[in-house]
Image (spheres, helix red, strand yellow):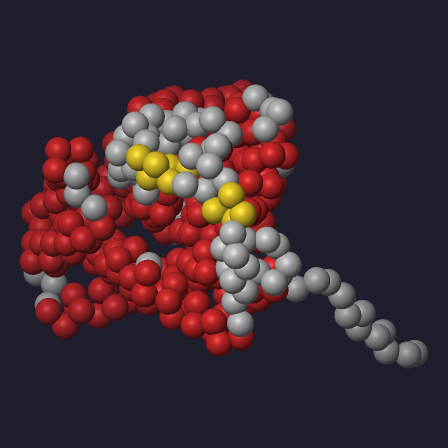
Length: 411
């Protein structure tokens, strides 16, 4: 009998984000020889930021970017984005130090045990908690260790495994999608757009409430249906084979140091909001604030200096890809600006959507951003790639980034 030959599946490999951005840099360099150079005048908007004057476009002298110029755009993009890049590095290191203390994990475990017997409130409370992680500091893959705990909790109170996974994934994703304070997405986008940090907060908080409420309602509705009719669960057979159950009698305890870490984390967020709104803090002050938070977290939990340094480096290493992607994305903008074609492209797009209401134009920009998710999964890299175009385009289609209308360039 002949051996079965292995069938090799062919597919289109997803390009690396850096390769994709370098390819875009190359395309933009070629376009500087093709697209006429042009320029808009910039004026001061109502919020004090620089915006595009929609009636000031004029063509200018062609300034194509050569081979050496293209190569230089990458280091230039990194230099121009240095403040944002180092903010991301410090944030990554600081949050790694906080997570290493175990304060957040233990706090969630305690809350899980406290609410375990109150099955009707456990879903909204836990989903809200995970959503806050997504909204405040982009908690995403960090939620994965909580899925087994939430599955045990869900099956212990009469739900199924899908409910446990949904509590974590739907909660954190809803918070991340409607983040109102995430420095990795909102902060980067607003910094590039040149608008005040945390501006448009009211709108984003309202969107966050709507998004998280919908996610909670969806998971809760499914959970109640499964509890009433367990046979409808798609994972019924798997759950019946489970022998492990969450012990709701033994509650873990927070150490004094971990309590101080949690208070420091909450206090840092409060100081951040106060400093930005009261004193106009920007990248350097925010970077210093989170660096201070990491030092205090290490001191409060007795972390050794060497261990602190290791965790700081570990966190910065984990976020390095997203941080450096900001600089590489900036090189795209450098090419467009040096070639004088950025405003020409904006002029062409604006003419194409000029006959549309601003709200419809905003929806088109939103759909473009959704499609960009499939190409660039990193939130920080996405903001760095799209905001140089989105921010001035929102000015041209009738929005003012300072007051949040249509709100595109406010993050």
